Amino acid sequence: MGTRSIGICYLSFFKNKEQFVRFSLTFVWVNLLGFVVYYAFPAAPPWYVQEHGFGFVAKTAGNTAGLVRFDHYFGITLFHGIYSKGSNVFAAMPSLHSSYPVIVVYYGLKNHLGKINIFFFTVMLGIWFSAVYTSHHYTLDVLAGLTCALLGIISFNLLMRYTKLKQLVTKMVAAIGK
Image 1 (cartoon, rainbow, N blue to C red):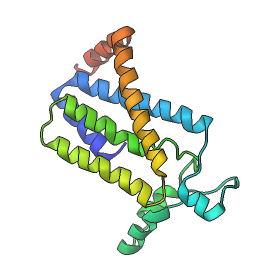
Image 2 (image 1 turned 45 degrees about the horizontal axis):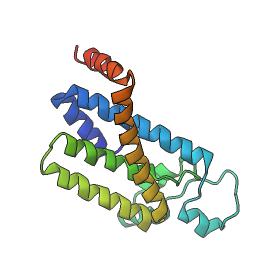
Image 3 (image 1 turned 90 degrees about the vertical axis):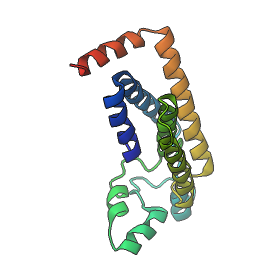
Image 4 (image 1 turned 180 degrees about the horizontal axis):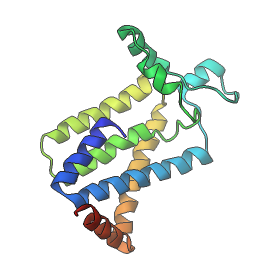
């Protein structure tokens, strides 16, 4: 979960515990939807295709791709340390990194957080751009991530309306309110 996601969680937690629970469950739901897609239909990221072509190479380690420029510029191994531990190289579609800020923007707008939403929206666009620019995702992966987030948000709201999920949320809010 990114820093902005954690930030909105804490803000929601202190301001409105029900929105905190809804945000958290929406986040989990979008992740589950994304996992189903990329385990059912594995897709290689651009850096993989650039290095290995379209053939399958088992046990391929993660790659910093374009983020290596950041590491080199600052003389650190931040992204190398993160991406070398990646567990699923073929999880590029949908880009869940592109989904997360959509959830943040949605809940920021829903909770009328004011000008901070401009920041959230700008970060979202920046993540989408950098995902493609650094060769971690194709534009289609980003669009699939956006779609996954929108489907997750819509279906979560429908589940809240038409199932007993609302009762569970009420119980969770009561439990953390103590």
